[in-house]
Length: 178
Image (cartoon, rainbow, N blue to C red; front, side, top):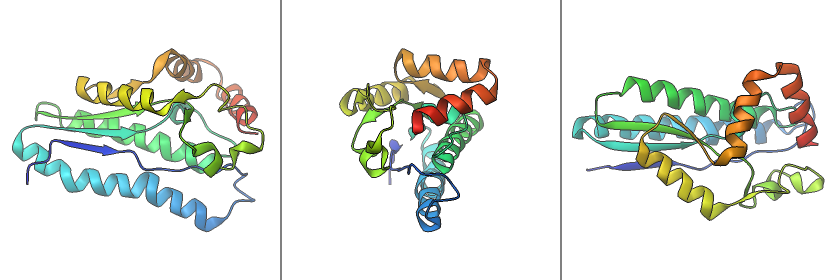
């Protein structure tokens, strides 16, 4: 079987404090956002290496660059996706295979309703169109960079999260998520 492209795009988030959250929902989020992505990557990676080419696109998020109060598990899973993707990208250098962590910001996909964010969160007020984000993800994957952002907003936010004190980034994320 010849596998050229793997896009790990499935995922969900949930807006609620960790203490008040439904444990099963949080567990399922880790299973989908982390475990399924790892399983699929592991399943197809060796085939791609053996054939000498292949591209893997793992959907991370701008959330990967900060702790996320009221969405703690979601932010943590997206940080995992980013870190994992960057590590595997380095491991497969020179094989013809690339692994890209793509980090969009808020995207109009219905995610906000599924995550119960339509209760007042400010995060999705200027969400990007899903079609534009998808095209950006494909372009990023084709370039083969280990880490890529969608638009200047996400690049700026990721840089800010590395520059400002973590306590400031957490407070900002908490405000966005409430």
